Length: 447
Picture 1 (cartoon, rainbow, N blue to C red):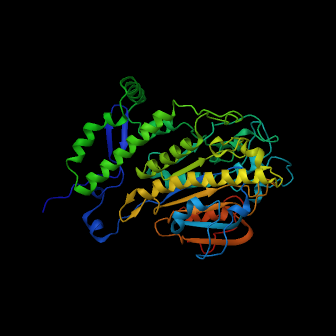
Picture 2: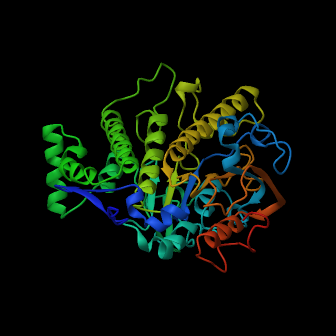
Picture 3: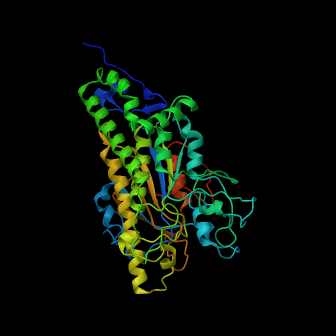
């Protein structure tokens, strides 16, 4: 009997300025583990933020437990019914004014992953709290190249005055390393791609990027020799997985290159979106693919993505919505504005569905990458018209390696701290935490 090839989980395909991590393969596990079906995969965590609240009677589902009906807004997610949990009753009390006056959008972004009240200041004396992702990253992120990955559709801002006297640092950052230090997100897909596949010295990385640009080469061209050497030693299943992975990387690379140079033609009457003047949907889908790629290669197990900051006033010409998102969120029950906002909410869900589809298409052992993940999708404003911070729009996708009861609508008493959900997630990945923000304990019936 021939000896089985064994390769480490931290094996890379290398080339000039490139270090391409591999997805999980049979060759990374012992024969005993393969035969017994006891393969163990890490649980990944992602947090995706949507701004400006929702039309709640279009978002809210009817029925509790497993016997519930999908709402119009959540329809794009219906194919993932058995992979997700819909929540009702969660709240972020620390996003309320609590004596600080206006500034709900800044507080919503700030409170989302921290459960803490932001100090109202536009100066350097910002103060908030540690976010759930960074608590996880400190312990759970020790075993990966990147403890965590921070992404955004908007540019990073660490200072300046934004919403009603609050620093822009609150509104443009989800991740907080400590109570005074936000972790700036990256909004350029190309920079994220290069970061995921960078290797060697800084000089080699820069030289590699320059040579690829000059020669119009793919990043795969630089690791091709290493890939061929490895492929000759792999079994049939792993060869197929490696080919699929390399094809996926090349497909994403092509999209990164094409979208970085294309501009979206806006019809008359539509405003240029705030932030990057490129197609928003393409941008979000690419960033979702970056997260999936980082999880697939175990480059990180923790990611945050600010799909758009709260207060974002982007228009959506592809939906026929010519006015800004934030503007129409204050609809005052105007039927046309309500309809337009519902379209945006539905569209955001369809972009999230793309990410889930990508995660579910990636096989790991007898399951999928989605089976081995927990992905929070939601925001810290419920009704954008009234700036409420209870009955928040929140879903959790993924089965956390079988530790979550999915396929259900979990209804909790109104004003249940959303931080309780985050405590439960930390507990699932064996990073037990006594308290997070305004948490009061673990969510009952979740795990």
